[in-house]
Amino acid sequence: MKQEETMLRIVKYAVKAPSCYNTQPWRFKIRNDTICLLPDFTRALPVVDRDDHALYISLGCVLENLVLAANEFNYETKIEITGNEKKPQIMVTLYDEPEAVKSELFDYILKRQARRNKYSNDEIPDNLLSELFNDPHDEGVRTRLFLSRNEIKWLVPYILESTRRQFSNKAFVDELVSWVRFSEKEAMLKGDGILAASMGLPNTGRFIGNIIIKHFISADREAGRMEQLTEASSGLALFMAEENDPYHWIRLGQAFQRFGLKAAKYEISHSHLDMPCDVLRVRAKLIHDLELKDLTPLLLIRFGHSRPMPYSFRRSFYKLLDP
Ligand SMILES: Cc1cc2nc3c(=O)[nH]c(=O)nc-3n(C[C@H](O)[C@H](O)[C@H](O)COP(=O)(O)O)c2cc1C
Image 1 (cartoon, protein in one colour):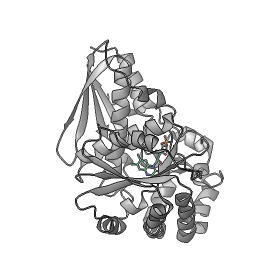
Image 2: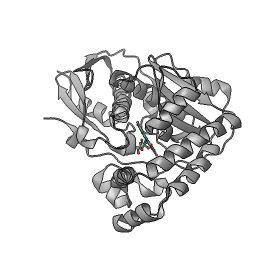
Image 3: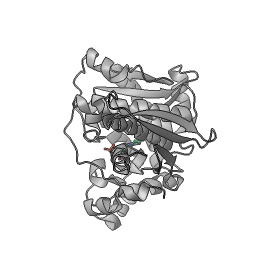
Image 4: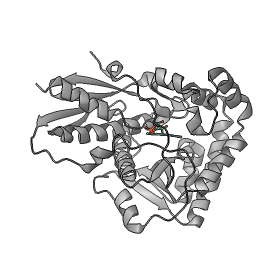
């Protein structure tokens, strides 16, 4: 039987992972030497993430942190993905191993963050790009980089169209607003969601915040803001799954988390411009125009240099444990 305290410490590091809108759609069941990582569909996003791909990518990010933390605390791990194909569960069995190989990426779990501010668009050297994106562990996942000004500009129409489509959809805006936290107090109390300030909105409290988002933020304003952020990037990376199923979504989450931790190590900021992947009509165009064939583009990430931002909150982790 493993020391319960160490298992809890491992989970505490795991939940520092990113998740779509910071929903933290996960639960943990600890049994003897096994940590079972379960999806929490009560925290799913049925509008923006209809097939739950972002939910499973988020679980992949947690899984990656969990393995890094287990190694750090002298355990080797065996990962099993069980359950049926549509609703897999992730079991991580821990084995005592005083010589467990530790990864320096563990040191960046608490430093990593998504930064929604504007980046300087200076060039990132090739050797650094290769370290960030060529990872031998990324089986089942591919990345495609857009680095020149022309390549980045080429993506802008897809970003504009998908942003306009999302922000013209009332159900999308309502879902987003329900996860925006309009003051630090609200974010702290709930321990989840996205701080309004990190989206370029004032900290007004929920009542006024709701009015601002629903009545003053137009699809065109948001599309214009996204265009500016895109063009201020050093590059964009498209993360693609070789097969469009939960197993590959989890793998993609692991690959994305490793990228995020390496980016934190080199103080390179990153954030999401996933809209062309999330709006299926635009995703289909992207697949066609980039000749991606069987690859499914799921995350579009901008990167570059910028200042750190306030860290996002996490729910009290005792709430995440199944009895
Ligand atoms: C699968 C996935 C999808 C995400 N999609 C978006 C997005 O569309 N827009 C955005 O601003 N952030 C997006 N994020 C970033 C999250 O909002 C962010 O991880 C979360 O707020 C927690 O903040 P942190 O990453 O700084 O810890 C996404 C993250 C994940 C894992």
